[in-house]
Length: 311
Image: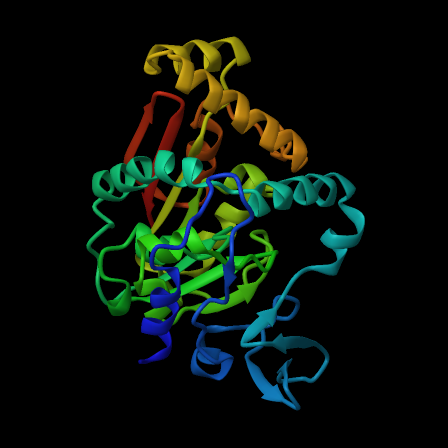
C-alpha cells in the first residue's frame, strides 16, 4: 500500500466531531531550486542563487532562509514595526486553528461560483501566484486541473493542510506546489514573470492593498490576470437578518448555532481579525485602473465581490 492510500485507509470509519482540532498535513512542496528562475531579491531586484542552503542575491548582500522547501522572504520591518498587523494576524491564526467543516462546506459554493464566473476554473499551463493563500487548498478547490498549472502558495504564515481539505481534495496530496513565505506588498517575483495573481478572501488581511495591486501589475506578464475576491463589510444587524432569512430556525439549528459560538469563544476566535474594511469594491477597482489594469469582469453580490483585471 502506497503512502497516500495508507493515509486514507487510516481515515476510513474514523469518527470526527465537527468541533475538534483538525489533523494537519504538510503540503506537497517542490524544491526551491525548481522555480528559482522566476524569483528575485525583494530589496535589490537581483536574481537569486542557492548558496549553503540559503537564497542569496548575486551581489551577496542579502540572504533568505530555506526550510522544508519553503523560501522565507518576509519583510522583518513589517513583522517588527506594524503592531496592528501583527496583533490581528495572531487573532487570524486562532481562526485557522479552529476551522470547522461547517466553514468549509459553507464556503465551497462561493469558491466554485467565483471560479466559474471569472472563467479561471479551467485554465491550464498557467503560472499562478496565490497571495494570502493560507494552506494552498485553492490549488485544487478553485482550479479544476491543478496538475497542469504551476501554483505558488504565498503567505506570511506557515499554515498546514487540515484533514477536512484532504478528505475533499485528494489531489492536494498528489500535486506539488511552490511554497513561499512573503508579504503581499513585496512579492519576490521578477517583472513580467507570471500569468495569474490572485487574492481569495485575503486582501482585507493585508497591510497595504494598494502596494499589493502595484506589485501584482509588476510581476504579471502582458495580458496577465489579477483576481481579487473577498467579502464586504455590512452592518452587524444586516448580517444577522441575512442569516435569519436563509435559516429555517428549529431546535437543532439553534443548538448548532450555540455550539458554534461557544466553540469560537473557547478557541479565542475573533469576531473581526481584518486589517482593512471595505464597504464596496470601488477603492480596489480604482487602484487597479490607476496602475494600468483593464477591468474584464466585476460583480458585487450578497455581501461579496470580485474584480478581474487584465494587464
